Image (cartoon, rainbow, N blue to C red; front, side):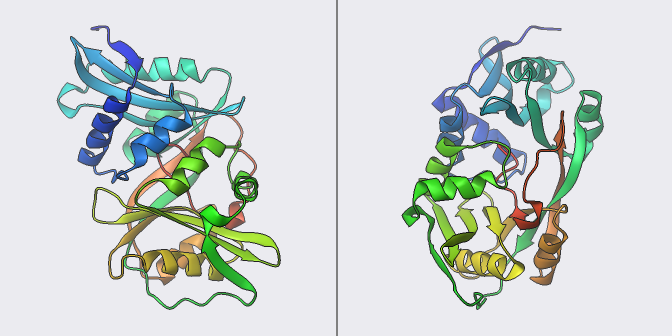
Length: 283
């Protein structure tokens, strides 16, 4: 097996990885690279053979005990030579001692199980044009999430994610092409959602958190109204049946399936309020 020269991906490399993801049909966001890179600058690895980039993986650390693996791919014409396996081993070494999560495509789930990952739920990407005119429940209003005190936003996000991720959220809500909304009522945060323009046809919405299907629908419809008539995509976890019913009730079409998998216990979270995961790349 030819040894792969593995290094931390640079900002220029991140643009290349976005190109690769686009070619794979993963529909990356236009501003994903800077936001992802800022979350953990050492968390993206790229492999080269004789200076040519051949494979990559993201192994982002959160807090002291959690990590998320994504962006795992090898260039199509170079697959089957062990290049990806070398990146995988280096990435898992970087996350040693942590509970590691990933969103695995159907074709690779058996291999992930051999590496110690266990399925927690299925995530289905739903796409389509969201109907307009959703009504908010009484006493709830939508505001620009950037106007909410940041600590309240991070506290709310922590209900749905295994570790605090302040750096990620700060970039996620402020990135070019991103629209972020919070639902508030009775002095409490009732929902949060971000839409990001992507390199494919559909803009992606993630995360989508909500205290009820009505709040989730209002967040979806309001974000979709920023580009009327254009399709959106949302990655819906079946661990929240209400989220699946909502996506199907809005007439959205399933297009892409993954499984959320972990090496350790499934982290505790408010799954009843999780209507759409943030991203398949960083969790």
